[in-house]
Image 1 (cartoon, rainbow, N blue to C red):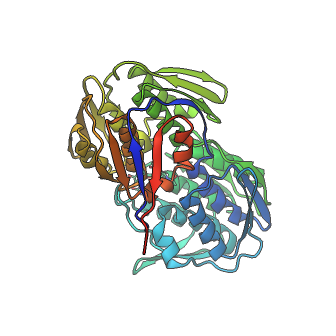
Image 2 (tube, rainbow, N blue to C red):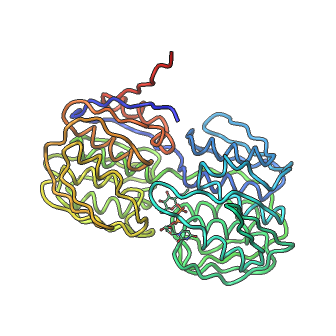
Image 3 (cartoon, helix red, strand yellow):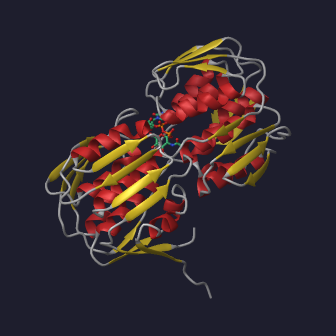
Length: 423
Ligand code: UD1
């Protein structure tokens, strides 16, 4: 990992327009889903991000031929799959590469992958993915950090998830579309990215209903055909910009958003005092004066997203009062707390709860990102802080925010990237 940094001079009011990129968390399962059909599928608005490049390498490793065109167009030719096994290094570096499990089983009947590692924010097991696939008739062997799975044929089943896991719901959907008979995923995740996957699968000829609700019903079909699809806008990127406007007393317009996907975030921002106007696929957010404290509890969609929790903590660190944040999804997602404290924030975290006493004295400092959204939180804190912040290890941020610095420079932020010189 290179040690690139952002140098951020805070206290600049942000004003202007940002066009939100396509959703990373939709693009990843959609790219995996293209494995299901022989031929070339086309995805529009896939963001230019490290995680997307990574998934591209995984698919190429399996034999797909991928081309990038204009307007973030990605065409994926999955006709000549030659492998059911992915390079171990590729598997271990990104957890979402596990999303090839379902489609590869459906297409080839076999797959062998390295068990994706834990990550900074929690242990992130795969038991729900594997349980669901077993119910569809897959034999699974877990040995020395590998998952080997095989099935001569997949049979539809009723699957009850213990937790509404996004990845497990997606993996099971992608396996079940080519199974014999009907599958019902109960207690399914309801995130907008699940609906986007359903829409793409149905364009390929699948019969999926109920995405966005508790039960997703999939009637298996014999064959799928390649399709074209535009990825939904990234709701977490959009949410991050909304918080940025509030924290800099700014006035930001967002283009290419689906406001309904941001309802829990908008509700909390309004409670914090933000003025938000919503119109079709655009939004405007403004803020003046002190931020009101609000309490947050992360929940599966349509609850408040865990992927926005760190950014809200940065905002509430500057509020005029005390807020409480409870993280219920990941057990170790307070890594930004120590770094925010280095910048002068008054936060006490214990277990899954953090108590944030707002201050108007955030100060620039040397801070380090530990994961993607923690990095976003520190970026936001730096925009609101006095003086200069050096934000280190920003490759974590590059995983999830396309052209972040360019977008913020256009709003008037004083931000630049520093790449260390190697003699
Ligand atoms: C996805 C998102 C991620 C987001 C998360 C929760 C992608 C690529 N990533 O991750 O940004 O933070 O949803 O909204 O879409 N769990 C189990 N067993 C399993 C699977 C999950 O116990 O088999 C638990 C996890 O430990 C976690 C919770 O379920 O506590 C949610 O995880 P999950 O919804 O699976 O997250 P991801 O799909 O990995």
